[in-house]
Image (tube, rainbow, N blue to C red):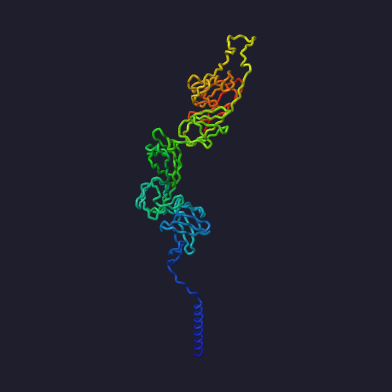
Amino acid sequence: MKKKSQSGAIAVMVTLIVLIVFSTVLLFLPEEKPKTKNPVPTATVTPTGAITSIPVESETLAVVLEVDTEVKMITVYDVEAEETKRLVYTGATSFYDGYGIQISAMQLKKGDMYRFHINVKEEWISNAYEAVDRREKPQNTKVWEKTDVDYMTIDQGKISFRGQNYRYNDGICVMSNGKQITLGDIQPTVDIVTVRGVGQVIYEIDVTKGHGYITLKNHGDFIGGVITIGSTRVDSVYEDATYLVREGTYNVAVECGKYAGREDITVARDATAVFDVFEYGSGPIKKGWLTINIDPLGADLYIDGVKTAYTDGVELEYGTYRFEFSEGGYTSYNATVLIDQPKQSLSVFLIEKKPEETNPDDDDTTTDPNEPDDGDDTGTNPDEPDNNPGEETGDGVGDYPGNTSGEDPMSGIMTSVSVTEMGYNLDLESAIYVLGPSGATVLLDGVELGTAPMDFEKIIGSYIITIIRSDGAVKNFNCTETDNGKDSYYNFSWID
């Protein structure tokens, strides 16, 4: 009995020791946190300063407004929350375009819509995917996109195009050239846009080709006429002549009665292009400024017989004037000048007069007894031209020494008598042919010879031939001819 009682006591003691050790172990174990089914939202301060409660991992559907690669921040417009946000990214952030290709932050385009996955705990973008899936077999069909929409109607919360009706909210994002604009800034019947949305709701409109204006200037002569813009648009010309067009380049034509004009006009987005039609009508300005360059300096200028100062130029009303330049020791220059533009110029070169040459035998009326008698008592050769210059009329345009017929020399050929009187020598066996420009007036040292095409006896020496085209343009040409027994041919045409 004594042995049994000792064994029981030992068992009890062992049991107590085990219990004590187990209790001690439990005291030093870490306390287990209670588990929850869903993560608890945490309060986070956004860059704008507003305190919001969002999940640890959230998704934002937003339009890219600005990308700052220096501070690694993207400004977006949240189309669902209808507010602007600034999102931070890091070197660990991944960006993907609509084809699933990874891109860099600097490749994000303003106006494109992305799904941004935000790690709220770390407060930065973990991933960003272009909202429109452009792959051959799209995996995300939530956001749709319609491109090249060129005509739509907007009416109180409803947008219609291509036979479909859509809704939109007041906070709809509208972009143009990477900047936010309002829905009212769109010209829905002119602009070409890209539309993005989800279901029947439009979240964004991006203007890909906007509008501008064409306005007319100095168009008084065209009021009541018509204007054609491009190949089809025709409208009336009115006093406040401003026309709405899509950005681009147009061939614009205006027409009213006897006046007509046409030019290529380029219109930039949100800008106004001016078409000045002054030169195509009579124009409100009736005066033009003529700049005159003359050699030698200081020569006198007479306009319609009145001596006129011209150092700084001359302002004249539109019309035709008779100009005469003169200087002692030089051959005077006469020209008919048409003033029909706001700015014109005229260059004149006067030719020095040649000293008169005398032949001592000219005064000797005796005849050489060895010279055969030709039957002429004057002792002159009948084959020589008559050197009697006749009377100088001095009536103005078309007058020249020896012209006593009263006929307009524009229709005739200058005779050798008048050329000889001007101090030039002739090659009577040769001629100078002026072939063009056809219809131009030809002058020699200011004296009109006729109208091209024409010909006259060959003049030996250096002189100036002036050409006045039928459009009023005037130009001088220096000519030098030698006594080589050959004809000379000239075409004095030039390009302005």
